[in-house]
Length: 214
Image (tube, rainbow, N blue to C red; front, side, top):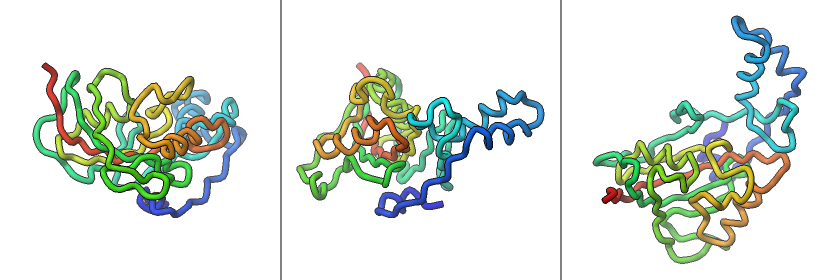
């Protein structure tokens, strides 16, 4: 299985073959001690939901990566650098730098972190992003990831669709949002697509500092 780093460096991976409900459900029924419906739910939960396949009970198998920790919510993370100091608390303002990639769709970047941007992403270094922890203004994956980071830490997170941007309405109502037009277009192409596009995202999040609530 290719690593996230391989995807980000431009390598493509072959998509998994779609498995029909006729294949999934009998296999699920072989599980001991659970009902067929419960077994089916357990199997289907391992598959990435796709709008074009809703109601058909099959999709693309979810990717898991070694050396990543998976939380109960389904978030996968790896600490690239462990910070120091106290964890942020609900109500604190956290100051972060971040980058983002459409890891489920060719690993395309939609935001660069604290470095010169290439091609149509060219521009001055952007301002740091700020949000109040626990206020619900950012995607759930950011809330969860930052809550257990210390200042100075850098964490790479792999975000399944249910922990990412809203699936209904305007996805831009939750942060963080790309700081360039090109980045917005790249992310919108994936999130607004109703076809068979994997909406799994990858972020690098750096917790620059924490401003305690007053």
